[in-house]
Image (tube, rainbow, N blue to C red; front, side):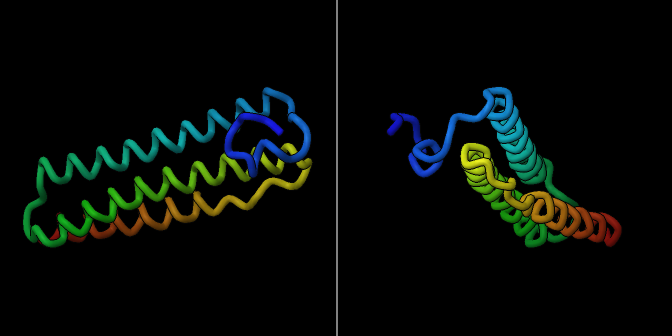
Length: 119
């Protein structure tokens, strides 16, 4: 049993090649940077404002902050699931985070475009 956490990841299987674990960590950190950028976009939207409805702006801000927080949590779970799969020599888990991000950003972009065109 190891002192590393989470135990549900590190207490199973064999230690993978460090290069793979480090690549998994770099991918996790890239998703964290993406989350920070999304939250920064929400802050900018709040600070700069949008012409027209403040209700639409407020909803977009909440959606962006929620998306940033969700991305952070899902990125951590993905990192852990990939690390565990490598340790157990199992296939890597599916990549649902990409679909979540793509769909969410497309919806936000369309709403922003509509708001900007209407005013």
